[in-house]
Structures are given as C-alpha cells and as structure tokens.
Length: 482
Ligand code: HEC
Ligand code: HEC
Image (tube, rainbow, N blue to C red; front, side, top):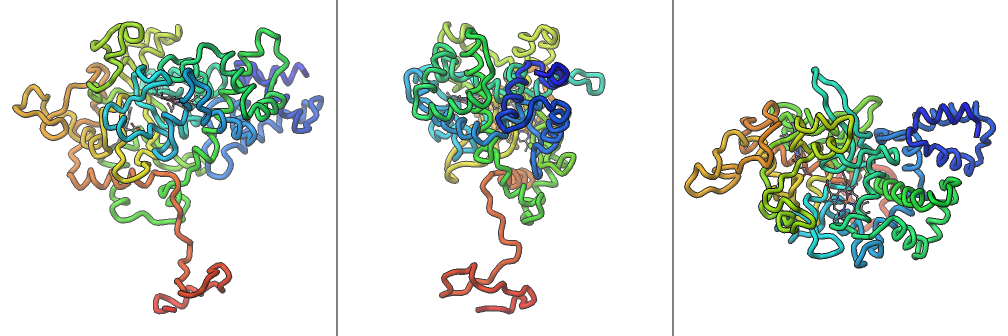
C-alpha cells in the first residue's frame, strides 16, 4: 500500500476501511502503484456520485462508492427479503419496511392499532413506529453544527439518530447491523449467526463474490466483524438503489419539467413553503447543482406529539422496559448521552426526534389503507398530523372539555413538555381548505408516478401498435379527431 495514498485516504475515512475501496479499485483493473492517478480518480468519482439530479449520499467517499455498486445492491436485496435471518425464522426487513406502503409498516391492522410492530418473537414489540427505509442513505453522519449561537445536531438515522454512521461510514449502513441482533426485531444472538446463515444460504455465492471484491485481508479474529459489516453495507446499498429510493414522484417529475401540478397541489405547495412553514424543516427546493430535495434537513425537533397510549412497549415488562407505563421516549437525548463529547447537551435535546423525509408519506397499497405517523404512531392520517401542526396550541387539553375528542375539541399534552418548538407551529391559522391543499401536495411525493408523454398522442381506435404510427404534428391542434 503506497503510504502517501493511505494517509490521504485516511482523511476521508476515519474508520480506515479505505482498503475496501482500494481492493475494489484493484478488482476493477486499476493499477494500485499508480497512486498519483488514483487520488484524482477517486475525487472525480466522488464528484460524479449522485449522477444526474440525485443528491450525494451521506457519509464518506469510500462508503458512498460502495453504495453505488450494483452487485452489492443485488446482494442487499436478497438480504432484505430473507426471512431466514431471524429467530424464530420468518421475519425479514420487509416485514416492517414494505414497498407498497413506502418502505414503512405494511400492516393495516397494526397501523390502526398502535402503529408499532412485533419482532420475530411475536409478543415482543419495539417502542417506535418503523420509519421509511427509503432515502435513509442520504442522511449525513451525525454531527453538531452551530447556528445562531446554538448547537444543532444533524444527521444519523433512526428517530433518535443513534445509528450515527461513524462505524461504517454511512448511517444507514450502521443502522443495518442493528435489527438482526435486536431482541425486539430479528432476535439473533450474535453477528456470527447472521454471517453463517448468509454463507450457507441460497445466495451464498453472491456474498462470496462480494467478499472477494470488497473483503480486506483481516486477522482471523476480525473476519466475522468485517463480514457482518459487509452485510450491513449491502443492505444499505439496496436501500440506496433505484428499487427503493428512485426519485420518481409526481413532484420530482414537476421539478424535472415533465408535468404541471394541479391547482390544488400548487396551492398546497405555496402553503408548504409559506404559511405552513413546512419547508423550514422539510426542504422541498432543488439543492446546489440542481439536485432533488429530500424533504428533511436531518435536524431534530420536539413537536410535542402526544404519547401513544396504545404503544405496546408500556406493557413489555421489566426485562425490556423497566419504566413500565412511566416510560417517556427520550429521543435524541439518549443518543447524546452515549457520546461523551455531547453528553452534556442531552437535557437540551430531550424529546427531539429526527425530521423524517416526507417522500412516500402517502404511499399506500390502496386508498382505504391506514398508515401511522410520528415516532410513536399516534397519528393515523396526514390530515390529523397537519391539523395538529395547525392547532396544537389553540385547542384545550382533554381535561378541560366535557366530551374530549382529540383533534376535534382538544389535544392531549405533549409526550415531552420541554424543548418544545413554538416558533414554527402550534397556531398556524390555516383554514380547513388550506389543510386539505397541504395534504394534496403531500400526495405528490409518492414514488412510481408516470409522467405523461411530453406531447399527447391522440388515440386511434383500431391501431394496434401505437409506436409504429407516425408522430402527429402538434399543429394539427385540438380539432384533430381520428
Ligand atoms: C420488527 C420490525 C422491524 C424490522 C424487522 C426491521 N425494522 Fe427497520 N425499523 C423499525 C423501526 C421501529 C424503526 C425505527 C426505530 C427507531 O427509530 O428507534 C426502524 C428504522 C429503520 C431505518 C431508519 C430509517 C431512518 O431514516 O431513520 C432503516 C434504514 C431500517 N429500519 C432498515 C431496516 C433493515 C435493513 C432491516 C433488516 C435488517 C430492518 N430495518 C428490520 C422496525 C423494523
Ligand atoms: C420545526 C421543524 C418542522 C416543521 C416546521 C414541520 N415539520 Fe413535519 N416533522 C418534523 C419532525 C421533527 C417530525 C417527527 C416528529 C415526531 O415524530 O415526534 C415531523 C413529522 C412530520 C410528519 C409525519 C411523517 C412520518 O413519517 O411520520 C408529517 C406528515 C409532517 N411532518 C408534515 C409536515 C407539514 C405538512 C408541515 C407544515 C405544515 C411540517 N411537517 C412542518 C419537523 C417539522
């Protein structure tokens, strides 16, 4: 390994997993001795990432390159769908992250009940609602930044940002190591069990190839850890691929100039950027270089969403939840407490959750399908979320009204009453029509939209192959009627 290059790469990648990249380059036929050439090559590759109008994923150059590797993406898809990787068998990632519901929870009944999902052991529940697994690779590594004299936290994935990305170089990759060993998810005892299952399973060959390409010469004690890391990277690569994060919503088509929004959607968009203040945290404009927006600024906020009394976590018993019904979701505070450099910032971040992307927020298998929203699944419709933003500080508490109906004549108190955002929400003075228009705009964020042909071709009955017909001139105007 040329020393100078190694030093340069270390600048990009604190975890020193840069050898993965070098091996990959070598496997692509790049001469490793030509170190002078490699660095510019790397930089140009990095600059070319997020090709076309896609933003650059979060994390460092090396990991980001791996996310774009089609072979890793294919392996990741098999891993994501593999229900053997749980104890007892039967639970894949897709059980809680399904494409039909925008890579979030795909069970109507569960969404309606609590919005929280059981793990492989059916009576064991987690404490939060599954976020969408799509677009999560775009979150930067968890870091602090100073804004208006205040220290703001940005990046990481999970509602509380605890997958920081500092381990594998991308937060979604760090995240992917979690569920396998989590007793309320896949419930496997250790990394070695995951690796063994993969190496003896139906797509063992895909994994063997990936290890051959990306695997590093590792000391014997390190092999399992590195292989587990590669499994997580493959999962992140799949979640990064166009299969999961395609940027194909109607709004994307609108930004690409392929379609116009309807008048209602346009009004919704204006409210989203204006009176609703939504864009303050869910940015919707193109980024530098014309990149498509992610509808999250990856910061953290406490909006005062009420506790969800249906959250099964309250009943999980002292083994999992020693606090019982008194449990309060600490959000970002718990993550900061575990990081010595930020621990003293924990109290100021109690109850803050990461701003979720709004991409696919309305994606559902059929119109009557209920989705749960917010970190604890309290809300069951977009209308309810928007009405809460609008009236949180206007409606009284349930105790103050005779027949309390939350969302109609009252709102329950926030789950965490400190660090509440009062600047951007609570009393937005939106009319019922404004609320409906905002919802209509959110519906334009679902992937899988087919933009109309740029020039509509008139229908010709009896003509089998439309593509074989000569192009109809637009000058024929609307009077043309075959
Ligand atoms: C039992 C349900 C369940 C299973 C199985 C599951 N997840 Fe999740 N997932 C969740 C929940 C709940 C959250 C949010 C947890 C939190 O924030 O504390 C989540 C969060 C995530 C996120 C974070 C997204 C973001 O932007 O914050 C990603 C990515 C993800 N899961 C991917 C996966 C992958 C990959 C697997 C399989 C290895 C998997 N999940 C298996 C329930 C599940
Ligand atoms: C101050 C930042 C901020 C502003 C302004 C804001 N949001 Fe949010 N949004 C968040 C955070 C943080 C959450 C997650 C809160 C939680 O779960 O506790 C969220 C959650 C949501 C959700 C639920 C998504 C999901 O997957 O659960 C929707 C829908 C939403 N916001 C839409 C809007 C709309 C519409 C507006 C404007 C009316 C808006 N937001 C304004 C920060 C913000």
